[in-house]
Length: 142
Image (cartoon, rainbow, N blue to C red; front, side, top):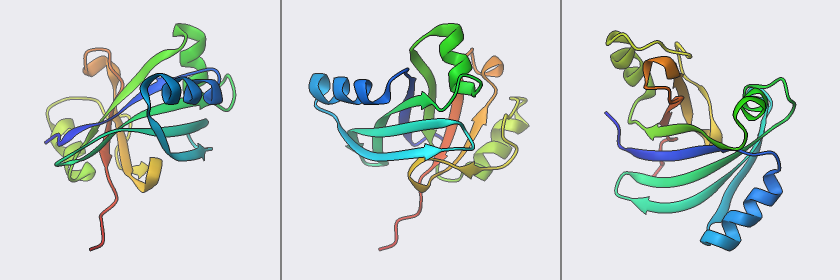
């Protein structure tokens, strides 16, 4: 079902400072920047590696305000890993399969994600305390 680790989402207070750190320390490159109003974040995707099943990224997340999910996460836990995103070939099918095994779904159907992906989240209490995101990358047109 999982193709790869698509990305690791990291909550941060200052997006520009964290981008500078990841660029200078690890040599990563920003490939996308977005503001996602519906999720209440400014984000940057930094390319880590390419594999047979697609690329992997670090996703840096800065909340737009303290009352967003990432804002509340930062207040409770501080900066750090917020979630893990796994690449799947079909997010709708993955939701049905995983939900059918008793895992609670935060999203009953896919929604818009970073870089045009379709995404959905699984409830962390049913996944060992880890907020888990399913990511279906946009289809590549030959």
